[in-house]
Image (cartoon, rainbow, N blue to C red; front, side, top):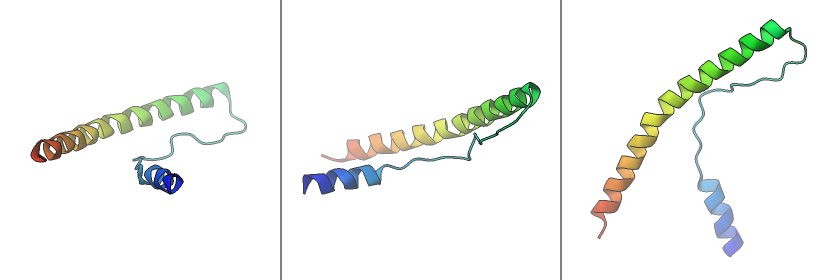
Length: 70
């Protein structure tokens, strides 16, 4: 029974992703590699900037819920 509960807890975890930021590339020039890395870093930064307010909002909601409970 404990193993089932642990498995359910693992399933309950939710992850938010925006888009895939890496791809397999087999042959690229050094210039193309730099450009791909720059684009990947830009997308990652954009996704992070979008995620932080969502995380803060959820945290505030959780705090409010816990304060309401006796």
